[in-house]
Image (cartoon, rainbow, N blue to C red; front, side, top):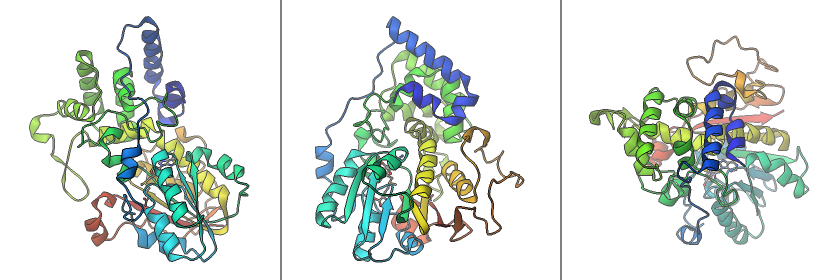
Length: 391
Ligand SMILES: C[S@@+](CC[C@H](N)C(=O)[O-])C[C@H]1O[C@@H](n2cnc3c(N)ncnc32)[C@H](O)[C@@H]1O
């Protein structure tokens, strides 16, 4: 996928931020005239060391809300389950151990995760079928395997990044570990796809601010974008810690850790900037929407869906999808909490039970982790689970 397509396929940017187009055009021109530095994105990485450091014995990612997922999916022996986000295999492994003769189709866009799924497939003698690809590629992958639409009994989508991705400094997701500013989940498959360094070093100030506002809900987006543009004039921003200190430079030293996360722990001021870049680079909201549609097509009537999200942008999208909102044109929806929720938005196919013609909610309210779960696994602190039955 080209940078052009990446920008164009982000709905909130496509419509509202013409600045992105201007920036894209000038970047292209500058590349031709060789007046700016080359993009500093790293090339494909050797992941063999990374893989050897993880084992399927001890999951490299602690599954979030495992008890709740198993409860709501209610998988029966012999059923076919689709884990759309295999990651470290934590949920899949629990399903395999709990339910006899179940088959798990294990999708992930990250080849490192799929290598783990292949190991698990050997351990569980073929009960795991690894599928390398994105949510938006799922329908084609299932069709290649001759799996018919409407034939899957349960689907899990646990959105976002895995600990394996976050903890590897060289993947560039982590604010606290220094590494190349990458953040791509599948750069091995799409090495030409722009990485986070491409975004911060090439887009103009207005486009950067739009990304930080749209995907990070960052109130100080314009100030941060302006500092980034100033800093990159001196030298390209190529490392995660370099970006963190550039963002920190937009604020007085006393407030760098003044924000609090949901556990009331100090959070770095660049946290939302990192989130925004990651969502943009991986086109995560469009992918999530594609994933929900693919899950709807794959599930059998009476089949169950569990979706775990980690920030409000994702949860709002899932909630509206399950309520029957037509999200085919994401532009018309305002994902900002301030603009959201007049309660009078027209739902395309809302039913009285809070679901839609496609979905019956298994619990009307969103499900959040128990206190002890958060203590055990603080990374899951902002998780939200929605569960529904396919009508
Ligand atoms: C939170 S982790 C899943 C963890 C997993 N449930 C476990 O227990 O180990 C999310 C995973 O989804 C994958 N992912 C994210 N977006 C994706 C997409 N659009 N298509 C396919 N996989 C995706 C990521 O690569 C990551 O491995």
